[in-house]
Image (cartoon, rainbow, N blue to C red):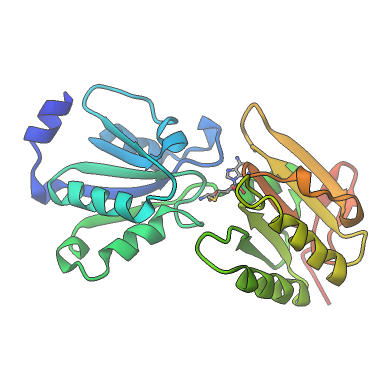
Length: 256
Ligand code: SAH
């Protein structure tokens, strides 16, 4: 179907919107459900590098946009679906983890017309699970995930939640640990960990998991350096029981 046909044939009753996760990078980690939605789509929206992962084909319109435009992107996607288009909004990893699914539901607030649309969330393999699998099983017991970006919340809240998670002795997965626009906040995170955890605590720096640039570093807290993290890195901090066996890091399933 050509793009023109896809547009002119749009039937408002048959439009739908899927918010889909593309997984951490490798095509083998995209679920069949997501591949099927992409094969049926007329429009794909998302952050530029994520849309670049979707193969162009006749009849498919790609709408890449900048990272900070999530709510506008969500509204655009809903408007297209309301016009009868088959729309996929793509996120990396899982769309419900620090990604587009929540933005779409935010855009649905106050719009009963859009709330009646066929909207589905298609899960993906989130970076934390792909990184944990590479290292062994560091998330084998209770854990939490924290987004270290202060774009949408103040640093004080990040620090409060970090201290609470350490206090509960949970393993932690850090998304968005360090970026060019905030090179120093990860130093502060390491300072809190050094103040609250023993120096032998395990940290895993998993960069670009499942891509050709993949790098995995498992180090003790005393050897951790801020430069080990960037925006393509997922950081896992073990609990006090997390340990090493051979080349693997794991957290035992029981705790006292
Ligand atoms: N929805 C995504 C997360 C988006 S936030 C998911 O579920 O994975 C973006 C952050 O995810 C990055 O800063 C990094 O911390 C992490 N990330 C995404 N892909 C990654 C990968 N292939 N390897 C390591 N970390 C990754």
